[in-house]
Image 1 (cartoon, one colour):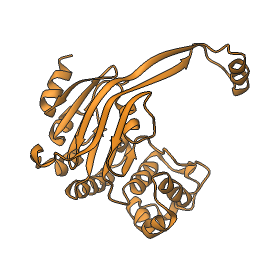
Image 2 (image 1 turned 180 degrees about the vertical axis):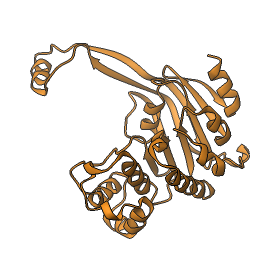
Image 3 (image 1 turned 90 degrees about the vertical axis):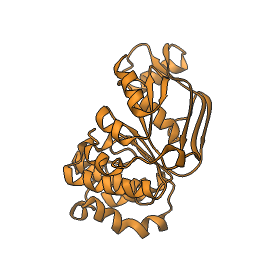
Image 4 (image 1 turned 30 degrees about the horizontal axis):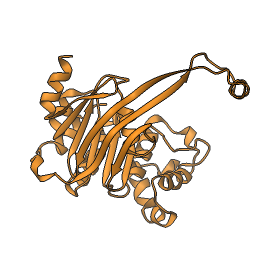
Length: 262
């Protein structure tokens, strides 16, 4: 995802890290283990039969291993690393989408996760129905969502399509609606995982303005991107994740230099 337009505004002025020392995210010895069947199983029926017969053999691997990390209120924090390093898994743990196999996660505030395009949307429901469904998944009641519904559709610019099934939406329309719902209320923590790469230039400018507003109001933003230039400009601190382990946390320029020297 390109964060060029975001970085122009959010990162034009880096705030002194000494002003953001109130802890809002704390991970203590967090580890996540995945189990994958050794062989491909074609149908759920076959899987169920073999499961009951205890004939399924698994390979296991640790996506995250002994992660200790603190993120502070009001800072823009970056996660960098190669594909498969564990960055997205780490965001899922922070958002409580995924429970760690070991360790403890402490989150002080409400999280707005933008982790996967269309996550939480039901393809057969209309855009309007998905606004309320997605809002409920984020912890908002119907009254709260009704109060901001018009604002959501205005931001996403989807009035002509809001009653159409969301399976008919383009990827850009998915992104616009997902971002609009997740950011309808000012979150304590905003998690962004490469999701804005599908948006057009005008949409990214709108996202940029909203994220800047959130930062100015004290929200914490955690970003995952492969664009090292923009990450270096944007973040006050960054962490390098490598094979499920945090190799380094600190000034983004230093972290990026270490990552590129791998």
